[in-house]
Length: 504
Image (tube, rainbow, N blue to C red; front, side, top):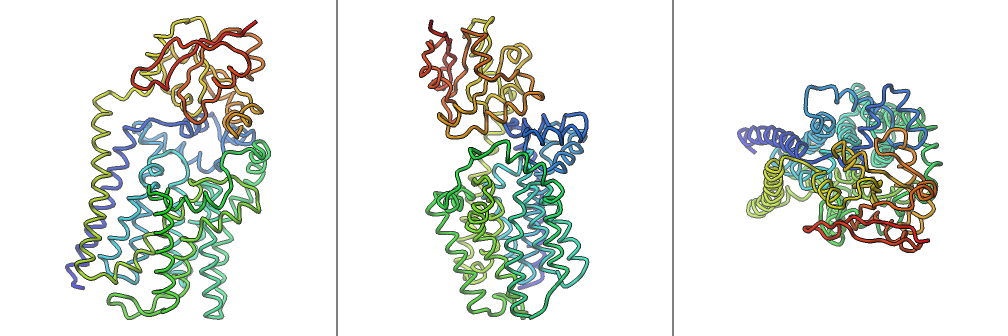
């Protein structure tokens, strides 16, 4: 591999990082805060960290306090709030790309490392969570940094960086603790082969548990508050389908890619255990093969671990698996001939191109429409009339976003109602209802227990969008209320407003 090619790969990495950051900023400006981010906004705008801790203790949100401290700092930047509060996530994803490149570059060519470093841009982590004011991208960024540090763990300074990275990941999201599994498997393999204990590495892994221990009372109170009906069904099927979800693929194809990646690591790494595929004469250490394998099997490992601790489970909690795919690709790319490598690169560029063209078209249309997320809702509310009646938002997921962006006039009519036992019956989970009740002191629209609300309001309006959590119309009909449509969105007939009357 010529020097000019390596320089070209380094420059390509710079362009890739620059575009990743630019794309993140652009997407942040055209994407309104959604439900979970609105909760983040409610938390970080509390007066003190003590107030935030008290809110967490009562079930208002689930992230560790350091995450909100970082978001409070980001919110002070002289930037639009859509960019400022998402900037930590944007930079964290840039760190993912950078760390994947340097991890692979240690044993492979710069071209191989660059191609593999571009793969995370096709993932759901980039498409969605890299521009979200939550802790998922931060968790992935810090674990990626720990991954690079582990590769260089023979030096004490890198053990320190690894310890700080894993602790920071855990301080960003509690489920980062499961990101230690690949490192523990890898270091166990090193121990078996080298017959030597690297105390610095094991201490670094233990550091990941420090935030968990410190904030365990908050996590325990959160778990006790939401109980056994927490959103997220624990099943092996969900874990397997997550492979496809991570890269926006059908479940079967995602599992196929995972199996291919695992086979590549086993065949080229562990079974043959030969030297690097390109020009390096050094042998790739066995612990690095196991580390890659650990990330690939992480959904299965997390399924069994969460089954033991009775935690919540869902695809977004498995985002760290994203790191395993580009690392596994580094076992396959060097085996391709020039024609195959060119075809693979063309397919990758085409996939990214289609994805990004869609993004830029969406950005252009959003700017043209002057970015008004609650405009359609307000128009529907005006058409419904009955301005003297409260307007109940049936779906809390969308309604929190509407409440955040609605004008003072529309927001003054909006109310939330909660009925946790009924939510279990009609939606299978009471998480959203309990969350609304926990957020009651921090939300602008008032939140009522439905029994209290119904006793004082024999007649009211209900805004329905027909989505997953929109179960109130069905429940009200079941309870004998009369529902009459008084306004309907012409573009989306699922969105409508009902006049609800209690029958005598």
